[in-house]
Every structure is written in structure tokens, then in C-alpha cells.
Length: 187
Image (tube, rainbow, N blue to C red; front, side):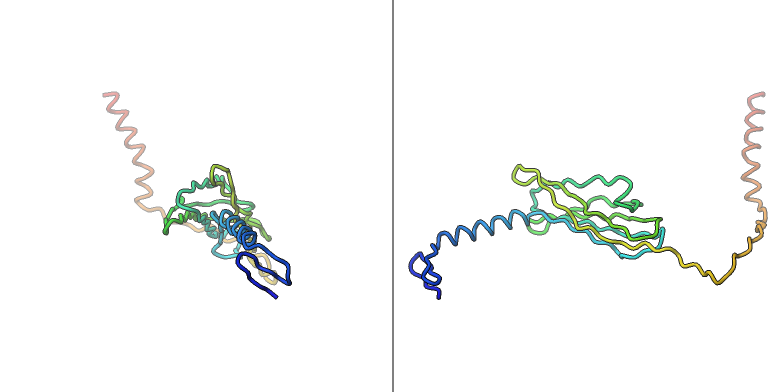
């Protein structure tokens, strides 16, 4: 049975001071609010690709507007995936929350199951260096299916391409210009 008297709460006749409860609740809420200030997330356009096919890795970081976020330098690869291209970091402010985003185009040339590891973002919180990390993502890289019931195909013949005037002029013009320049030099 719970009873409440002035500043004391009793549970089964055991007194619990209201100030102790409020102090514990304040500590819990302040700890979770400081931990939830900066969050990072990652998503991909699809989780199964063919060898050489490209996917988009979308990175996003949400933080208070005044927080400086240090983006990692991803040089050439992310885990077992090669970086094909990336966009510059885009920054948007919604209220007093800053959202920074970047899209990275990835590819892989090896068949199997590969993980895009968690990406670490560093930031400064109240003068202390902190970091947050995205979750890792699994991607399946499949090979092309080969019809083994068919035999090996014959080698195709060389295709003859007709010679056009444009091709001929492209080859002759440098020689004509060279001869004219030599003639002018002698003259």
C-alpha cells in the first residue's frame, strides 16, 4: 500500500523521501538527455546487389545546432566496398537541431556476404571529445547466373567496320599540317 504524507512517500510502511525520488529521476533524465544529443544513422538503397552493381550509402547525423561534427575521411573504401563517388556533406537546420547528410556510392566485385561497418563520427560536447557510431549493415553480393546446360559458345568473327572520310581526314590532317609547317620554316 502506498501512502503520501507531506514530503514522504511510504510503500508498505517503509518511508521514501520525495526529494530522494526527485533527485534520482533528475539524474536519470539528465544522463539520457546528454547521451541522446548526437545520433548517427546509416541506410542503403538495397541489401542485395550483383557483382559490380552500385548502391547508395546514406549517412545522417543529428545534433544540436552549435555542435561541431567531425566527419570521417573515407579514402577509397568502406569495409569491403569500393567508393565510386560521394556527395558533399549537406547541412540543414530544423529548429535547434542540425542534420548533416552525405550520400556515398559503393560497389563490390567479390561475391559473398559483406558488412558495411559502423561509421564513427567525432564531436565536442561541453569541452569533452565524444563520438557516436552508425550500426553496421549487411549486404549480399551475388554473381551472374551461368547456364551450365549450354556448351561453351564459339568465338565470334571480327566485324569489319567500313572506313569513312571523317576517319581518313583525322589521320591525314596532322601530316598535312606538319608538312606545311616544315615548308614555312624552310621558306
